Amino acid sequence: MAYIEFKKVNKVYKMGEVEIKALNNTSFEIEKGELICILGPSGAGKTTCLNILGGMDRLTSGNVIVDGKIINDYTIDSSKLGKKTIDFKFINDLNEKQLIKYRRNDIGFVFQFYNLIQNMTVIENVELATQLCKNSLDPSDILDKVGLKNRKNNFPAQLSGGEQQRVAIARAICKNPKLLLCDEPTGALDYKTGKQILKLLQDTCRNEQMTVIIITHNSAISPMADKVIKFKNGTVSDVIINDKPKNIEDIEW
Image (cartoon, rainbow, N blue to C red; front, side, top):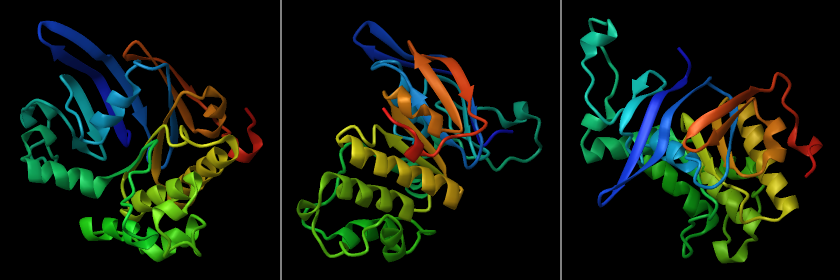
């Protein structure tokens, strides 16, 4: 069994009598410790996929399995799985506190905009993660690793855009999550700074054996990934496996 399995997932949004199918029979697999690029035009279903993986949205039908836990939007009869006993969490059946616990402990989010708390210092922003989850890493060590050793006591307004994104990544990594989900993490950054952020994500995946999923419109960076998943019209149109992923420093666009 793969670390992450998306199995014939459908997601339908309803606006009055109108139904919008964001995901249409979508299937793919991801192994533990892989760096994944999800490519596709706007409206292809990339962010919907990420939101379902992160427990921020619920699917309409299908199966999503993350590290042996079934994340579904409907009840499954465990007897149909062929197991006498089962320790899977059925995210749909969890109350809101349990759903928050899933997002808190298993998922790290990095967004296009940094979402830092402006009246807290860099290290205080990252320390928030340690207060929220039980298996967190040391904030000071993580900030050293992302190149912010001398910026720990600065406030977000005193940092560049690239430095603020590094803080956001450090905050996500500090949670020690099973999945690091990145939605257009370089979308608001210039070329040079964006490349530095992608190197940080690539190094995190390689050195920490963390599963990293990056959503992007930029197909030029796809050679850095172990696997490229292309979305079109709410479904997976192609999956490309890179046997020899390139270092981001060697990629130009």
